[in-house]
Amino acid sequence: MSKYGVLHLVCGLMLSGNALAMSGKAFLAQCSLDKLESLDKQTLGKAVAHCTALVQGVVEGHIATTAYYKKDRLFCIPQGKRYMELTSEVVARLVSDQEHQDQLFGHLAIIYLRSANPCEGKQ
Picture 1 (cartoon, rainbow, N blue to C red):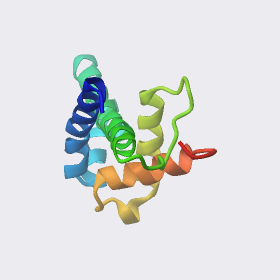
Picture 2: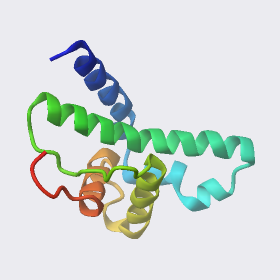
Picture 3: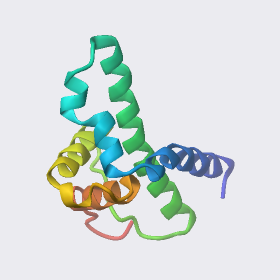
């Protein structure tokens, strides 16, 4: 694996670490639309960046891990789709999936991303 590949793997896993340690409920406590709407402009920008970074960590960690272990991806993000859109998808699914909110956020995010962004073929 190249130096870039190792760096990508390490960065993705570091970003995903926070996401893996929290429940879906804890993620929503920070990132639900209700929570974000209650914040002032300065705090809102930081909170949105934080929430988006958590989802980005799951995505990047998944991509890096599947590449390293030469496994098929569980989800494939369409070109041009932004992390903000992915975050909105994950938040919406978590809000509607109250039954599973106690599960780990990283696990739930992968399930939701897979449902919304399936892979057409092997990656």
